[in-house]
Amino acid sequence: SAVISQKPSRDICQRGTSLTIQCQVDSQVTMMFWYRQQPGQSLTLIATANQGSEATYESGFVIDKFPISRPNLTFSTLTVSNMSPEDSSIYLCSVEYGGANYGYTFGSGTRLTVV
Amino acid sequence: KQEVTQIPAALSVPEGENLVLNCSFTDSAIYNLQWFRQDPGKGLTSLLLIQSSQREQTSGRLNASLDKSSGRSTLYIAASQPGDSATYLCAVGSSYKLIFGSGTRLLVRP
Image 1 (cartoon, chains in turn brown, green):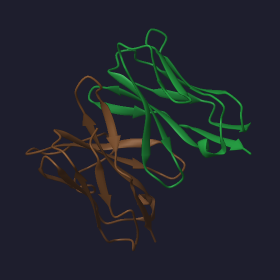
Image 2 (cartoon, rainbow over the protein chains, first blue to last red; image 1 turned 90 degrees about the vertical axis):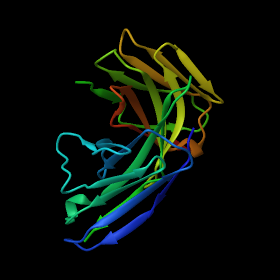
Image 3 (cartoon, rainbow over the protein chains, first blue to last red; image 1 turned 180 degrees about the vertical axis):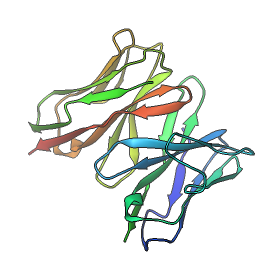
């Protein structure tokens, strides 16, 4: 399976500012996924990012708040815009790996605290 | 709409005990099912992946089973150790995305 490098690992940000999270994959992948995990909760999919096209957002998530870039097949960024304390969460990127053993692997996560 | 449920929400056991974590899902049209481990404040580590055509997978002290027709999966941990303490997440792959359960928080007491 692919190996994902995600950064930053954590950050503390002021409300009203924005943070960009990066994910670098060690191989080319078609689809990348961004998840949010609010405190004490499970993971919720934010959006799916394919190279060369607009990201597809899940219900409850909008591009203005969570713009995503996917400039090539190994890299993606998620920006959390105009942050409020409610955005304090762990954000994770994920890729699918194919072949006979199709599945998903995750980055190490970004722990965001908004004050 | 696919929904994934994990029972119990939390579990505390003495070291050495064998234990079973349960996962159920509402739509049997799945591609696969993955079990993950998450340590506090960290990312996810994949433990076992079961394709829809498979019935079980084993890795060391872990064994995961899948019964698509009943919408259930179990994760069996043999001879539990304090290092197994973590949150265990079940995720169902369908429609090219993962749907997660809410997790089971496991504590193995020395």
